[in-house]
Image 1: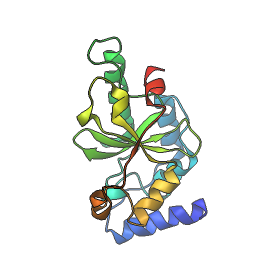
Image 2: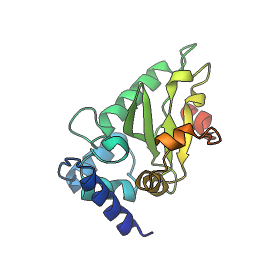
Image 3: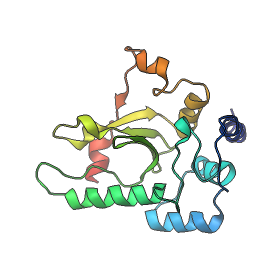
Amino acid sequence: MSEDALVERVRVRAAEDGEELGAGVGSAEVAGVEAVVGFTLPPLLLRLYREVGNGGFGPDGAMLPLSGEEPSVVSVYRGERARSDEAAGVEGDGPHWPAGVLPVLDWGCGMYAAVDCLRPGAPVLLFEPNAVGDDWADAWFEDAPSLAQWLDGWLDGAGWWEEEAMADESRVMEPWPDAAARIAG
């Protein structure tokens, strides 16, 4: 499916779900966000925030706004990175949030869907801190190999958060293999 068709499917689904979407973000806001986070946002993620709306769509209608209203992608990213930086070198804690990984959806209980903006395809990761033992890398999982595939899963009702998928015990989310290196980096 083309990116144009995917963005249109997202827009239609958001409207069908009755989500009240704010206006999309403009170029000035995107430039400001990229200056704050220190990297370029993936093209598909930008299109969603420009063409669908500034959050309020996606699984559970819960995509965070890019910036502005709190919590936002920028405020959560900055907060997690600051806490992660503060914890560096602290015995029993340590850093937990890698640079370049933007939280885009708050699942609750400290869990986030996050887009790896530094890898091709913008893989979607799950940050699940509630069962972490001694290593924060254990809190990171690969949800989808790309943002496009993650959106397709939502649109097709096949995401892990769907009731049927949750009941499928054979379905296992794989740990993010780059977690330890990216957290330390």
